[in-house]
Length: 328
Image (cartoon, rainbow, N blue to C red):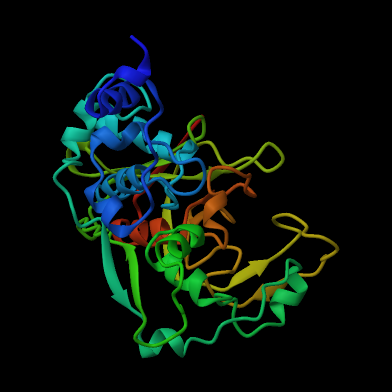
């Protein structure tokens, strides 16, 4: 039968069956209403509403996908694989209908919420820029955020690209401006971690609680070939929030032409971000980062690097004395 003789209804059914699905437009409503049926509707470019919802649902379980950006990448896949392990599903890094049902994906409709820019937000003292050179950073008062977009995106665990895509005409620095933001809602019990494993092969930091149950997992950058992370068993020694950073090329590494010891000021764009969790092995620790999108994708100088928000949650879960095992 020639297509020109099909009814309109039959033609629509034929097109739905044989042509690629139309991509969902990225709107707060599309993200909140995304269902498993939308998992095949891939946008040509930009954030995917289904992936945004998936990332948020995983993050709410403290199975962190890293930056919530609506893009199907390595950290999303690692989070899905971890979720499947925890739920004792078949191994893999794909979200199938069973896994989506366990996440209650079709029923959840509050993934994107509303936020109004506060007086405190608009009064924040932003840095003009953050120089790469440590000597220049050491001269600054604070290694602060450089824009309202960066500050708000990090607060809500988002990429700046996703924040802008959901709010295409927003003035992010204007008090009272209404924004659509990710609604993550993590709520693990403070001090509930009993041990940590830094798994080098998968680039994951896994947190165990009572009964050796996994209570959280985070994508992590764990050392590099040039400056490998430790091996074996260590423990948490102390936790510093909003830390400064001591650069000492004789103990750690040399950055550029900087050969002298110096202290860099605190701030979310500092080398260790907003959290430093010192380990019993001197000079090594678990910390945040000024570049959350690069976590688990680039090397570190031997430490375990997380996004600032994952490091902040971890700092609430652990205490001095909690064991940390590095698994090769």
